[in-house]
Image (cartoon, rainbow, N blue to C red; front, side):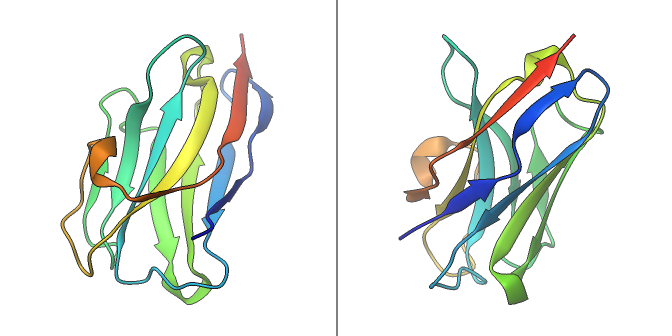
Length: 125
């Protein structure tokens, strides 16, 4: 299973970025999906998650109000719109798929079965 994350880059504090995660060749329209990140020297942490139909979303407290997760099932793609970026948002961002049709959204990385390769986001101060 291949997940392709893209959209990372180097930005300044206060800027915006939109990450995309595509699942070419396979539809995940009935699966929950999430975004996680890992900063240098730190453990991977939950960022946001979305249910299979987009009706439920969860956010880490640190990004609530600044980030928005969404999905386009027709395109097999999930997005992470990141606004008002801060230096502490720097890290490699991973998208993930939780197996199980219409399964509940999860915040624990251990509940996700498929992971993308990650895209680097660097926010300078």
